[in-house]
Image 1: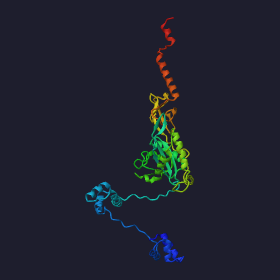
Image 2: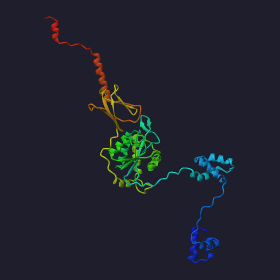
Image 3: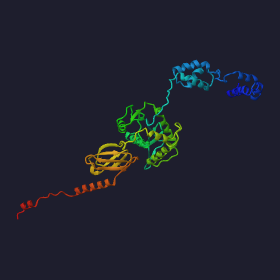
Image 4: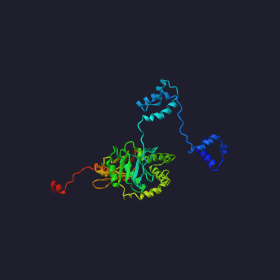
Length: 403
């Protein structure tokens, strides 16, 4: 038998160079009959699959098919036990090889996927990713965090933002920060059925309001359809293995700064799939996208409370002082990622302004609030120590005492 290359060389020796069959056989090392057969064949030689050799499991295939028809997911160990009782004495490896051919006939057809082509600026995929380790937040504490991740599937641009809860206010802040990093607005955003986004397939009111303020549409994926944003899911493994591995973080700001720097570097590389520099495709994509609004939608958490007798506000496991002169009055609290403020509803007075901390079990007292509290306490003490004396006009005494 000769291979295709040898077949072509033999024909060239005979036709072009005019060598005899004896000389061709001497040069190639093949027999004369092999050379004659190669010259007679007008087509190159082909070698199909070899016929299957008889196997010890062949006489028991009928029983294996019966078992798989009743239970397609039946384990190989259980099938081996059944056919051993019928006289099978081969190894389990032989059975496993045959099961790989027989079992797919009885299983539901596997899911197939079509190739997806993205248009510039069409979609931005969002998801939540949990870092492998807790984030240091100060005071000797660490805390579980989440990454709001974003990717433009056309240019493969990646962005991420660190938050510490799955509340929509935090997710909305993370989405806004990612869009600012991308520098433009897509036509639609893609989310799975996250609890704060669309727990039952329908967008929540805060999420719909946020998208309405940005004038972007949305796509909510079907349950278990993470493959629909598979490029972003693969980036999560990249974040764990390439970004987090071997790094140390001092606090949340340090984590975010290192994440931004890492994102800039990976967005400047040549992507393996598109064969193009990501930042160059992003510049092309921005031409098809809308510009960001002047102020991004407000993502701060807001609620109204009445200032208690002990003027402190509890939020995210911490206590923040309030102005004690507003005790009993209602204030609107606004909690962002950087600070917590409160304003009296009736007069607009500032009730507090504190830097937000992500450590827990702490109490923060503004020195001005402490001074005001001490002044109020001093006034109450003075009122209790001075006796109340009735003061009458002098004319009353002139009437009682004759001149």
